[in-house]
Amino acid sequence: MLTGIELSLTIAQIIQRLRGSHLHSQIERQAKVSELPDVKLESLKEDVRSFLKTSGWERKLQNAVYRELQLPPRHPPAPPEHLKEPLAYMRKAQASWEKRVLKSLNSMSTELGVPLAHMRPAAEQKELTNKWNEMGTDEPDLSRFRPVYAPKDFLEVLIGLRNPNHDSSEDISARSHWGLIQVPLNVRDIPHLREAYSELNLTSGQMGIDDHALIHPVVMEEDSAAAQQYSRQGCPTGLRADLWALILNATNQPQDVMHYEQLKAGVIQHNLLVDNLIYKDVKLTASNDDYYFVFEDFLYQVGSLLLFSQFTYHTRSCVSINGVTQAQVLMKCLLGTCYCVIPFHGFSMYVAPLCFLYNEPSKLYNVFREMYIRYFFRLHSISSHPSGILSLCLQFERLLQTHLPQLFYHLRQIGVQPLRLAFKWMVRAFSGYLSTDQLLLLWDRILGYDSLEVVAVLAAAVFAFRAENLMEVTSLASAEAVLADLSTLKVMPLIQVFLFATAM
Image 1 (spheres, helix red, strand yellow):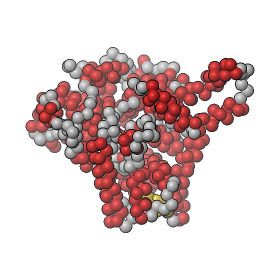
Image 2 (spheres, rainbow, N blue to C red; image 1 turned 90 degrees about the horizontal axis):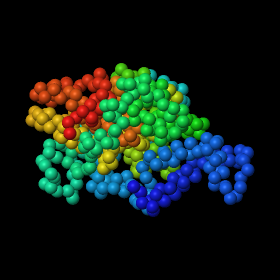
Image 3 (tube, helix red, strand yellow; image 1 turned 30 degrees about the vertical axis):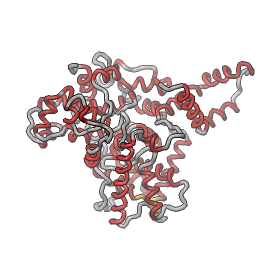
Image 4 (cartoon, rainbow, N blue to C red; image 1 turned 180 degrees about the vertical axis):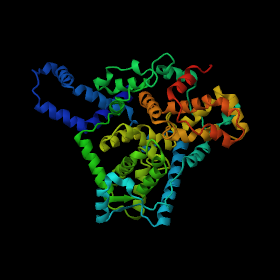
């Protein structure tokens, strides 16, 4: 709960940000050209409120405020690094990780003789413009390019993380030492999860199970908060695209399309080394996926646009992007103070499922950008946030240790750490592992609850569902075989049974 001072500061910041927005200028312009009813000085505030409500601008303003409240807070008096992560040892670990990524990028640039960023020659710009919608047909030799890192590399960093001020001998039991994650973060247990996810109880209808029962007039009201609440029980297939865009307040107005075209022009003019990494990642992942290979061109475009949007944000005040300055700018664009944008192996799979919902490139980009800055960046950055990958890993391990202790112990006895099997699912929010229809049902709940916590719950639920088979395995290879194919799983029954049918 915010204090009076904190609430006043938050309100002032939201007003300041909205004052410089396109929405503000639209409302101002509309007020000037509209014929307002009789306005009296003594009732000015009420008259303006009435105008906003009857004209439809009130709802748009509410949605804009709601979006600002969903984004990470911005408190100017605090240093940016403290806003990104309040715990000092986490900040230090993230800084160390960023240096490692920078070293990998610089080494690759030096070895390949490819600059981190440069202007494309005119002929190359023309060629890229002509094939913008057919980028998948290009087959450059990327054999020497390698991903900056793979999920397993990141997991090793998370495993080695320790709080220097925490005495692990003070833990209630030795159970905390069974798992790989050894940082003292607060994660919710089953009783608290049941309370938080009450809409998922076994008696509530869920889209994907009871599709006939859930159509609601909220889909016509254009209310972001109501749409978010509605999506907790799943979105109808035909309405999901509109509902997600409404929840994220991701518009596709002329100014959004213009911004998209500006970014596209920037990508065509500038060649970033990381463009090649995006290209190779698509080739290694989505292009080989039965669900997503048809969206290859979209994935190149959106991935490049997101990277370039960060690049341009951090280069506006730079005179040059050569030499050391270039490396610094590129790292700022990849590991900015707001959101991490690192093209690791599997990055393009964050975009791929959205291609089923949006066929307009500008709308696809806007929705993905909002999904990324709210959720996906947390899956590959070190932080103490409840939706951060570290918290998800710890919650997964705690859920297994508490409710499937025999399975956890058995796997440990044969040298298998459950997290090493589940991490690849969680770091990609299960994209590429579930069938697309089931993945979208999972992402409905991420948006509905404004949290990635359900990803850890699903990972634990998968182990519970396959527990009988896993109790029979005697090696890592056989455990991997049991969990190799998740494409036939039904997400919501798994989560519901694990949360609400698990013994207390």
